[in-house]
Image (cartoon, rainbow, N blue to C red):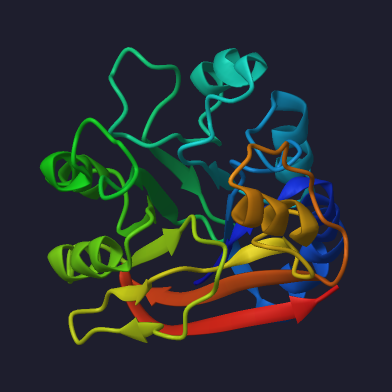
Length: 257
C-alpha cells in the first residue's frame, strides 16, 4: 500500500492546489490512503469544518492538525463528531477531538493515524514521549499500519521520536516548519521517517506569509497581521510504501502547481 502524506496545507492557495491536484496524484502514485496536515487551511491559521470537508471531499482520508487547531472555534464540534480529523493527543483529554483514529484504506486495510505536538519551543504541557507508548499500544490492537504526525518545531525532537518508535510504527512524519527536509529514510526495522514534509502553498513567501509583512516585522519588531501569499504554489508530500505494517520505501515529492 502507498500512503500519501501532504505537508501543511496553507491558506486558500494551498487548499485549492490540493483539491485540484490530489485526484491526479492519487492515480499517478497509486495511493491507497491519503493524510494531510490541515491546521493552516483557514487563511493560514486554523481550520473550519467547511474547509475540512473540502479536503476530505477531494480525497483526503484523514486530516491531522497542530498548534493552530484551536484558532477557529467553529471547528470544535466537528473535531468531536468526525473520526476523519485528529488533533494533537497531548492536549488535555477535556479538549475537543481525538489524537488517534483508524480508517480503512482503499484496499481494505486498516490504517491508524496518531497526531502529536512537540514540546520544545511549542509550549506543550505534556511531552509527546510521555503518552506515545499508550497510543501506539492502542493503535496496534486495531491496525497493522500506523502513521504518526509529530507537529514540532525542533528537528531534534522529531528525529528522536523516529528513533524511539523505530520498528513499532510504519512511519513518523514531521510537520510544522513548512520547509521540506531531505532526510527521508526507512530503517532496517521498517519505519519510514522524515523530519518535515514541507508545505502545500505559496513558495514566493516566508513559509506561506507575504514576504514584505515578515520583513517589516523583523526590521521594525512591531506586530503585523499576517496575510497569505499567492505566488509559486507547490505541493510538498511524501509517499510511504508499506507491507504488513512495515515500510519498504519512502519518496519525497515536490510539485509545482
